Figure 1: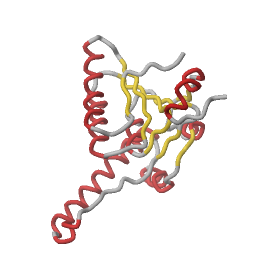
Figure 2 (figure 1 turned 90 degrees about the horizontal axis):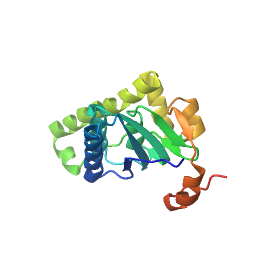
Figure 3 (figure 1 turned 30 degrees about the horizontal axis):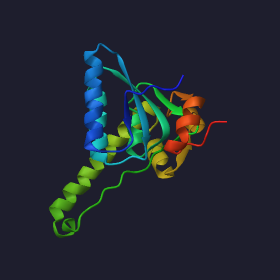
Figure 4 (figure 1 turned 180 degrees about the horizontal axis):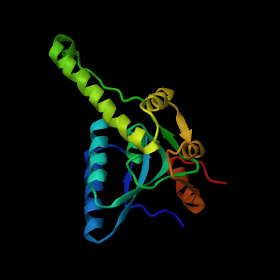
Length: 186
């Protein structure tokens, strides 16, 4: 049976976070107990990703997710906040260290530079904590994972317990796969 998703994360825009929030609210009003999230994203803005995580955490619904093509960067972190984490067999998962850009003004303002540095450390820890808890690994192992900075296929993600199951929808992939950049399932 092809998947039926309630909401998709394909890019990181305010509208994506707002749409996620509205869909979760609507499903809760309808008496639903869960929501199906599609992730097809290389990642994006850390602040918007944190907003989506906050929305998921505050929702009374169980948010389940399926990675259709890829979950990279912030999208991979969002996946770890979902109750059931699925990946299509030809999808990828990618973690890496978050990067922060410091404007030229920082170089002229030592106090601003220090606040930015401390903010970056706190944010990095906020992103490491859910990975550490969900994967039941040490902080050192999380740093090792982030330093690897490489894509995992679904089989490796399952073996390393980054997902709960691998799913295949051959009809879905055959018809829609080429439109979203997936190779066809044989």
